[in-house]
Length: 303
Length: 278
Image 1 (tube, helix red, strand yellow):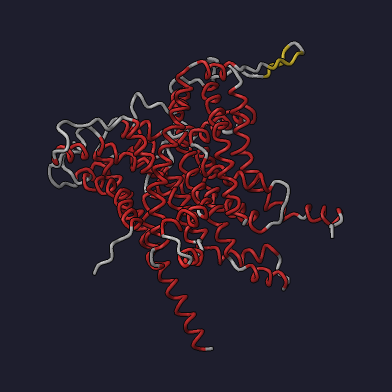
Image 2: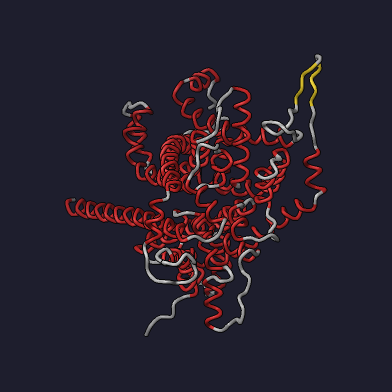
């Protein structure tokens, strides 16, 4: 039975339902979606010494409308190897950190999901608690541990494993460690949510049929937890690509990450068009990961 | 005979140690009397006294708390509406757009969100003259936007669990949808609203990157002060601040856990009593 258009129209015009939809939709469109159009616009404009520091794209004078789209910013990004290697460096560091997060987080989430019911809430709170404190302060904690005169070097010297301090601060290793440390709870949370829903009878069936434990894990548990793996990985990978704080505090001059480059273009060089172009290219790079995450998350939201 | 702990249990313990040891180190060195964070020179509470005398930090704490309070409150309203629309309304045009705009902020790199919002505010100031200068209000808008996405996720997962037959019964008996929402749905999802509010509050308190983009000279939040001090190197005053933050969050988490456990026990008791009565 298809509803006739008149009652459907009336239902749409009924005030309350429309308003309930409109409030969040308008807010998010205005403050989340619309800004990207403006970033795109400014990425196509020319830098200028003015307030704000870019030239207008549209210019109306002498009865002609001049549209000046400047692709120079994008060409500039391609021509300068600094930007290309910063994108590549970000993707590489974010990818490796995601893999490490998964390798550490998966067994943890698995143990949590298998723990006795009365322990599960406590374990979940213990894993999430650090992420509720302060991101900045948790990254800062590693500065004191990793520096040349820091705790870790002192410990290694004292044990006698090394004779002179190893340089750990201001390296890519420190950046990856920082990312793994800061984002680990976000990897564990979706994995745990997924693994607790796993039907135990499937595992029993596999073991009844003579499957070894590890084989059951590979053939049953792992494929069934694919959704959690994707969600957790995207929750780590996507923000890590644009990370600014961790490379700034733990990274060194050789750490090239795009979030830091964008920040410097914007705040130090005051080159808004180039910063916008950098953001647009980053967004383009992340479009597929974001779509992947959205597909998983909307299954979760609507089911 | 003791059972050999499984590989995953060992990993869980090691993982928790990895998460907590750096925080323990932070707390430990906040009581160090030396300015050097790596050399232990005896117990002292002087950094706490210096922290309490630091007017800049105290002012930033107050600014951050106010922004976080208002951002979390607004985010709960917007996020709950969004969650309700996504879980209770049948398909409508714009539903896909809404659900993408709720999930994308969860992962969007902060530099992109911050830059795009700043450019929006600049553009708006040029066209409609508002906001004339950036500060607490623009930070509040920015935080509300990304926090409402988190609230929507928390609340919608609760909304899906709720037994819809009670809502349907109320509406069958003639209650208008608005009344049904306030009298039936809202009390049931209240714990999720509280959880969402707290999450939004901590997210707003913690944000450095987005606030740095959209803030003006008038508004300096706590993370901005901490960041500019930490950039210069390790400082025991920040350790003292970290200790206070960790203490507050741990206490709040413990209380939340305690009340959750108690209400769970009470529910079980009521169920048992009901079974006996029947």
